[in-house]
Length: 135
Length: 140
Length: 275
Figure 1 (cartoon, chains in turn brown, red, orange):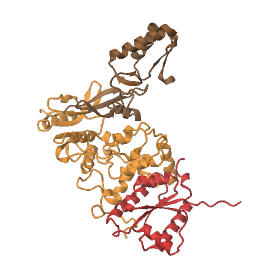
Figure 2 (spheres, each protein chain N blue to C red):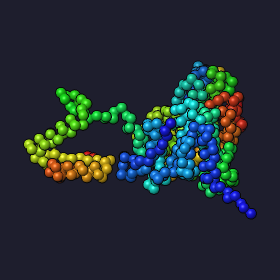
Figure 3 (cartoon, rainbow over the protein chains, first blue to last red):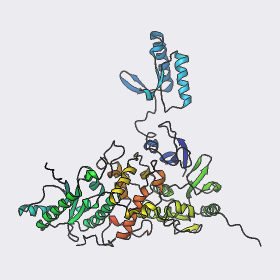
Figure 4 (cartoon, rainbow over the protein chains, first blue to last red):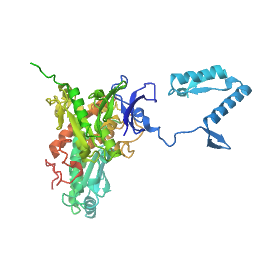
């Protein structure tokens, strides 16, 4: 029997509350607020309390999906990324770099956001970069 | 200028076997009961949960009557044992929260007690009338 | 004269846990890591210098989860007075198997008793520490009988207006284990309203706490809006004791009075309906 509480940061907003994921034999079974965390002080909002709701959700994507003949079919990461790179290249060549926009996420890490804007500006050559909260 | 008199809206939960029959008895005997009462038949007064009463207040009732069989007469033998413990506790809780506990009342009315039914309901309506609308005691 | 140094409470409980682990599958207690302090199940071979006793978490909830997942497991718990009371109420409701849980009781300090206004800051199965006097009563509760209805109303309307409906009070409560919670049922609580409707939302929980609240104060500590929930639950507890002679957590053999007949749990006062 392997029981542990793993400290992590809530992904839902910029507050970054500390919480523990309660893990029993490799499966997340609950959430505890982190009482010794300076920000959290042992309290969470409803999103933090339900942070484990999406982990095992049946609607959660497990593989990339590519639309073929009108249906979404499972694909490998290689296949999916190659398709994206090929299409972005085609669109850039045909319609110019500013015909493409990149939308990032406030839930993403600073590092992920940095990479996306690098992809946008350095690889594609457009300043059309923004994030989900602006939608 | 005539001031409209406040007509309390009362919901009365009545147990099927005793009180509902008692209300029927009152009707058959042509005894007048106040029109303020909205009767809701339940199988046993023990079925009345606190959330049901609280939601009833939320939906606009100024007073709630919970009525069932006298002790010993319950069709399910001890359903009203739960009622007799829960309703006074819920009244206390309403009082703690700053809502007049007299807005909730428990009464035993048997199937033969038609006159008692009209007496109880009339008295309760008048009592709630003096207390005023509940909307003045809870947030909008 | 050589005096043996008196071990501190924390050293004494670590020692006790080390001894008991030889015959138990695990002991539920708090563990300190580089990240912070969280509930843990210490097993034989674990480093017991990491065992802590603060800050308080509802450890009985961990026991309940483990008892349900592992029907044979035998556990200990480092328990304060409130943890032991929580265990008693959970055991009555089939959430914990009393034959498979061993209470390693610790006493709260005088400061802790005062902070919680606790009436019983020590468990019956006390193993480490000395019982201290109860904390002074909560001043709001003490004055409540003299507080007029309108003032009580204004007080709670102001308090509940702060509620963000995080369900923290319910999630952290050791006695809240219902799979279908009435506070989430749209039949009783209209969804989509913030602050949640007064008085339905909070009074449902207060009523459900009537025979269960063991005054552990976790709800107070977990409410982000600092709503003094335990004031309401303390008042309910006082009422339960007066009308039914029932004190949650006191007697494992006393059935939950609101669910049973008058023969099993009689009313002590005449509420006017005894005919």
